[in-house]
Image (cartoon, rainbow, N blue to C red; front, side, top):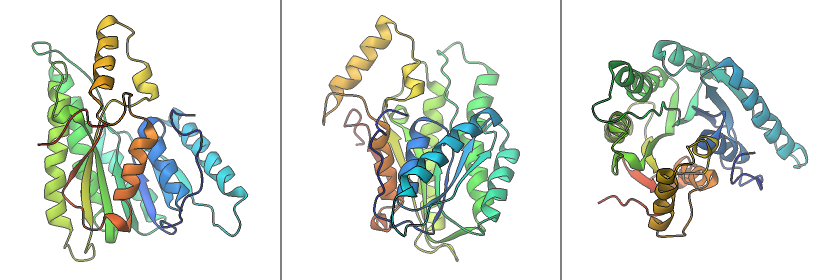
Length: 279
């Protein structure tokens, strides 16, 4: 089980009947978000990039089924895994839209899937740029566009960004640029979709995530530089001297997915314990 999800419980059932897409739901932050939304009653369409990862979403489904098994008179949310290759935007959109068609409508979209690659200035290749722009800008843009016919009134779109968009690393020029772009696109979508006929009162926000304890983070090389980097991040936290946990992020996304967030749109919410502030 991922860090921070050992005590998953059924929450208020305020999302019952809602359909939520969580891209990149097979592990890490995406998985935590999917579990959180499902624990509040939402049906989940969770994506992964490879067929080999579908089993992880099946495990997620089994976890949710188990969670609800002993709950009196509560309907069990549906969890569906979809293979949607992020680096193939046309395939990506088609696979997700086909899954949404089974429900006929969509209420929540969490764009969490991303390609994370680093390259030092002077070592950036065309392939590196193409991969990051395709996965982190082109795919999200075309996915929102493809889903426009299915969004309902008071829908919620949450784009997962990174503190790297405002506090970039020297080896993350293109990745940081992509995250800055997704925050800018969030503001455009907020203006364009909030009063769109059929989507009235829809909100669009972004969550700028800091270093979080995930399987991916645990695979960082154990070098003096990385150890110092993590120590610096912990020290910089204003709230508590630790790294983020996946449930820290999932609960913020959960708020932005709810009716309670109705007056928040076009915003970037920092989810990093205060390591990077938005000025």
